[in-house]
Amino acid sequence: MRAVWRLARLVPHVLHGLWLVKRRFELLSAVERHQLIQWWSAKTLRILGVTLKVEGQALPTGHLLVANHVSWLDIAAVHAVLPQARFVSKADVRHWPMVGALVEGAGTLFIERESKRDALRVVHQAAAALQAGDCVAFFPEGTTGPGPELLPFHANLLQAAVSAQAPVLPLVLRWHEPGERFSASARFIGDTTLVQSLWAIASARGLGIDVQILPGVDVAGRDRRALAEALRGVISARL
Image (cartoon, rainbow, N blue to C red):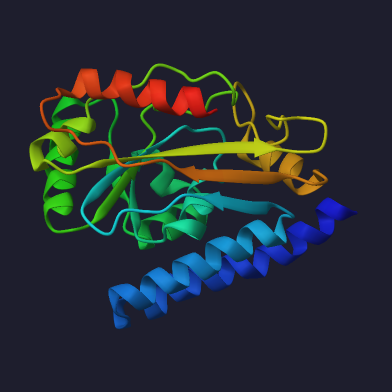
């Protein structure tokens, strides 16, 4: 019954978000869009019974945000804290029902992961966004992991920060629930479908996420591979 009630509340909230993206966003300033993204994301977490705890301070402008990746809800958790973040996401997310339109409206940069040429295009696009003062965000693991153990970090998109000489802001995401320091309910791995994951999250009792904003990392004198290893070590140690 808990899951049914939460999902019944989530549906109109998602539809409202779609209406805002389609009808309102183009009429709003960047600050107003960020306010709506933050409100919508935080309410999404509340509807699903997720508590949010935040530590640390963000950088003002023009930085690349990197975080570990556990759940499809990670983006909502980050946007509830840093609504200005423009995520880089795999292109097929654009075609997910309802979710695709929402993330596209939030300024997501889409990438065809199998195409080296498209990866280069996104690196240039991200570097230009960083130079313009935007916050660009991505998950260097490239896919969701189990939680406590990080997957290898892919370095390609870090080239955007190196090229733009923009600082990197590491973010640590830890999903938890009573009795589990790393929540099993939030994991989106293996053959788990989006529907199965949504039901597990909506059914969970006491689910929470801790978002830790770590100190910014200067990219001066580092290549992207060395930077990837350093960031993986920092995030892993904090987890």
